[in-house]
Length: 152
Image 1 (cartoon, helix red, strand yellow):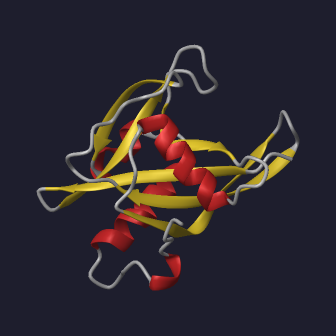
Image 2: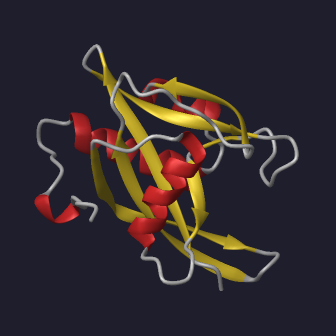
């Protein structure tokens, strides 16, 4: 079974958290859908390393802060008859960072939490964005030290 990862890039603009979503190219799986960054874990790579690699490959950016969202994206895939449990990561991106997309995507957009329902169709992805937003903005929440990943 393939190991997968999700990455939810975000930035703060005018004090508000915004999430980066990418529109899938017409010739790729999930064509035309707005999604977060996702990908496969390669041999010899940890899930968090795969997340950093996929972020760089799909957007050309390196995060300022990279952390584990304390939950997983879980769903059943009928074609493979597999239940997936996908680690989710959040990646803070500098507001000045230039996004350069790979050929898997035809567009990108920064959205606020109010826009999530309009763009993101997968319930688990919406849930994880809302969870990351709550951790980032709720005064009773915080990114715990155990969640932060310091790349080598």
